[in-house]
Length: 187
Image (cartoon, rainbow, N blue to C red; front, side, top):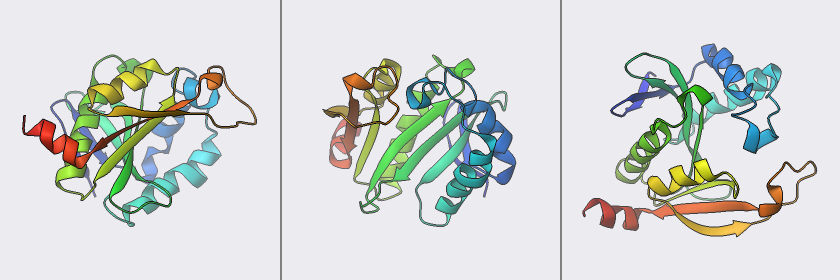
């Protein structure tokens, strides 16, 4: 399948079965997993038997999915980006997601790729609404969402059997609508 999208500094490509080690390393970093699992790694067996097969199955289900990101200049694996279908919603809504290796934080990659995915979703994929969610205390991810053009729409609380620090502040949802993006893009 190859390349899905390029930006000035990144290449987003389709995942393959050979990406298991990359995902294990990414999800094995406690800093990366802090706001997801309180730093606990995703077991290799889960990545090989659940995560990676689910990513690969999505490619056959429509234009939305999850893609491996690499620096164009070096080829380094930086993490992944996703425009995922939202359960119970139509194909015109997608959830933006990203997970980057800590070594690549603070370089603007998350904002750059998110903006490019939003543009592609609204111009090529028929998406009308994009959402993104994170813990309210995850200020870095919230900043990426805002820089990518999404706006805060709600804070909500969920029940977790094993809550992680910060859960008490809730989760936040951001969104951008195609009509708003078009208005901004036209200047």
